Amino acid sequence: DVKVTQSSRYLVKRTGEKVFLECVQDMDHENMFWYRQDPGLGLRLIYFSYDVKMKEKGDIPEGYSVSREKKERFSLILESASTNQTSMYLCASRPLPDMNTEAFFGQGTRLTVV
Amino acid sequence: AQTVTQSQPEMSVQEAETVTLSCTYDTSESDYYLFWYKQPPSRQMILVIRQEAYKQQNATENRFSVNFQKAAKSFSLKISDSQLGDAAMYFCAYGVSGSARQLTFGSGTQLTVLP
Image (tube, rainbow over all chains, first blue to last red; front, side, top):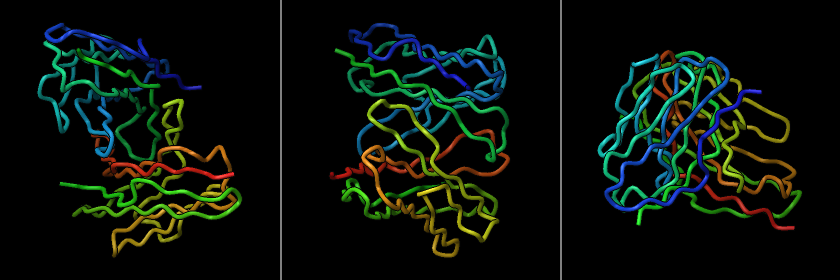
């Protein structure tokens, strides 16, 4: 089975802290994604990566950065956490840039910034 | 920009009955895919069903089927013989064929199944 693993299910951080959310996939997928999920807004794309060291902004990149040094790992970084970044964060991966392939999701990290 | 609209924030259905979840989308693309994902309380997103825009035939997966109306840009999900395990948040999603960019999601419909 394809597995996408996010390092934490729940995380509490203080305002101004630098926060790292880690995502690892075990199926050699080229594409990886970070979404933010908020009630009434669905999932919104923050950043995506289609290859090692390659990244592109999604719809809401402000306040976030990403890192992909290895194919299996995609990290989301909150440079200086703020309370409006309290949310559920979902990582996903997909093998090819072809919509016929299914995207696989991690179980989400619920981040609270206090 | 592509948008996906789910106008029903919450729905409920009696066990063993049928329910239809609505989804509309806006796009100028001709080659795209549509998806329904399910997110149970475990938070694990699960693909329920997928539809290629170039196919006229509606997709079916066991008790799940779609009504795809391309001209109307409508993509509804029908769940037949509803089961307690179907209770979840359902997201409609859209993606452009050949694009590395991931899916655009709707805001979700919370489905409750009543015993």
